[in-house]
Image (tube, rainbow over all chains, first blue to last red; front, side, top):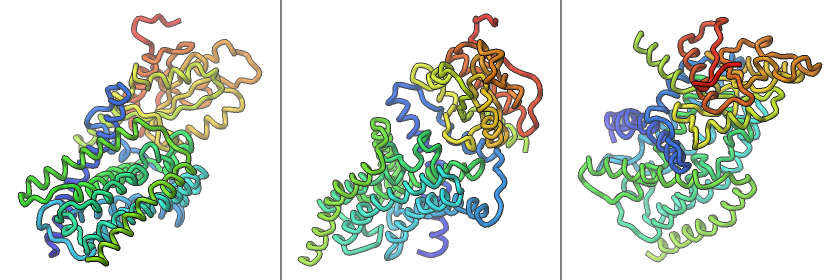
Length: 304
Length: 164
């Protein structure tokens, strides 16, 4: 991958030029799906865009010292990491990529969550700290399953290159891995059964409590970009391999949309669990399947 | 530049985020405010979102006759809402202290302490009146921008309902 294609992927498709409108669209789909499930009309189509513009025009409380500078920096780091993660997705056929880009993608996907933890603690608000502690506990729980599932897919196919993984035919191992990733996505995107860190009203707004104006707009954008990156990762694993570029792009968007609908419906249909129930769910119920997946992947690898 | 200003004005009008604060209310107005977000009234159609933190809010919704204990909290929360902001007083209590007038535990009405933009009278007001009040406040906020609040006050009622 040379520098021109890398820049084109980061800035145009599936990077920023595509990802930012897609992020707003997915945020709208999330809210609209919840509204429809509750027999409401829901927000208008442009709502996330209006929210973003309005937040850009609001003032922020004065921030002083290193903690203030850090508080300004976290949302920007989160947005750039999420945008980078979207840019790495191998949407178009033969789009390049490099050996090990899956590891970079996972690291970039993890950065926004790290930023949220750090943001809550640097805001020095008691509610922010509670939210950050919850986010940290949640992150430790789902990441074991999430990473084991992805490693099992990669290990069974002998590569850490995303494009090679996406091009391979289906196997039972891959389906098991995809199912495990899907179980982790609600926690990764802070959706309803696991919406603990930003538990609205319960701990005010969790790590975001002290954020206002443009900084909050950046957090909203990074959340939307996380939606695009996380659903896009599943979409690349699920999508069948096609050579036509427009068909590949269409399949990617359609599959992402389907996953967003699935997750929002789940969010509307469930209530928030307590933190201990959530941690127990990931450590007791899903970890077994993840360990099974990784051990069978390694066994298959030794046998072949 | 003009286009950007118009877009900002339009966005402010279409995305009012509320922070709800109780200053000693009997809970009547509080449940009506929540009722305006339920499927029957569905204020989210207008972009309304009830926020958990005053930092995120544009419109501060205050219910209750302002007890002495609540005065400092009201001033603090009003300061925590980032500008441009507007205040909606929901119910008759923050407007006039209602039946609790002359009580020794009160320090109302609300506009003694912070500038109020819209009063929604009623005991409790109907959810439609609250939604109308919020929309009026969003309009005021969009037109005013970052300028300081003026003394003009709007009163929101359900159309056809007589003012006392």
